[in-house]
Amino acid sequence: MEKRIDGRTSLYALFGTPVGHSGSPAMYNFCFQHDGINAAYLAFDVNVENMEQVMKAVKLFHIKGGNFTMPVKNIASELCDEITPESRLVGACNVFVNKDGKICGDVTDGKGFIKNLQVNGVDVKGKKLVVLGAGGAATAVQVSAALEGAAEIAIFCRNDSFYPRAEETEKKLKKECPNTKVTTAKLEDGEKLAEAVKGCDILINATSVGMKPLDGQSLIDPSLLRKDLVVADTVYSPEKTKLILDAEAAGCAAAIGGKGMLLWQGALNYEFYTGKAMPVEEYQKYQAEQAEK
Ligand code: NAD
Image (cartoon, rainbow, N blue to C red; front, side):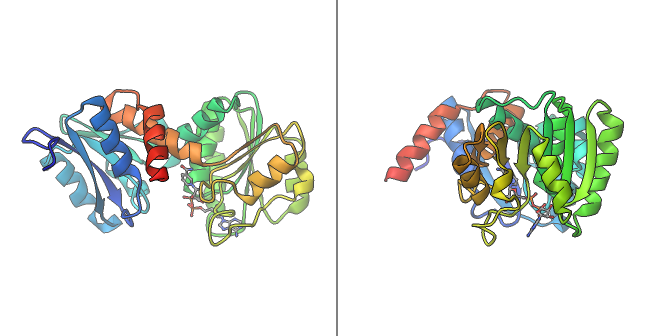
């Protein structure tokens, strides 16, 4: 019988759909057990239409905290009782804590990305960035980078339904982070993209290109990759995208995949709702042991 669960066990939860593949329950339950926290973390498959009921249920059942994933991250930011300025700017919420019936939300995707750069020795402050994409991950990265003091952010997005979001982010950041120069251009303008990559310090792919079914593809011509350029990807599956492999082959200053972003945003979530630093090293060790089995 499960010895950890008793009448006082608190519940933490993930909401979204699909959630069956999520690594969050395994990670947070490991951490609760490791830290001696009497809590359990479960995943609930819910859609946007269920979200008002979800928020009521969180209060009714005293769910202490948890996460929102696709497709409910945007609506969650509207339904929380309180959100951080970063969550408001991104227009999304992926983590919440229940403070005596008040649901407080934040977004940690961008912060997790920045932290992953930092642990790899890269600081965005004062740097010129090119960020490809204008979806959820891209917007979070763009907002966090501006809040961290990036000097320039050149957003390149395909001429699709996400493009207006890039323009919206530019507008918001110009108002809220006036010290960061933000521009928006179409990915299809190859000449402009090449010019921007040549002049930037950090190139970031925050599109789905590189991930299945677009694995083996990259939006950047390898001839643009140079030794003093830092290259980072938000895609974590495969661990090394074509862009990251090209950057390694070109001897770029750093080639940083998206797996660390996933880990660090998870660690920031844990800290947000438990107030404790996540036992990251111990969890990584446990994960490696499980993979060997
Ligand atoms: P999204 O659907 O919100 O946005 C997709 C973006 O990719 C859009 O800007 C779209 O224009 C662009 N795009 C799609 N196909 C393209 C193509 N063929 N050419 C050019 N641009 C194209 O998705 P998202 O949630 O922002 O996720 C984007 C990527 O980031 C995914 O691979 C996802 O797995 C990854 N991600 C990683 C983490 C992490 O923790 N590492 C977190 C969130 C997302």
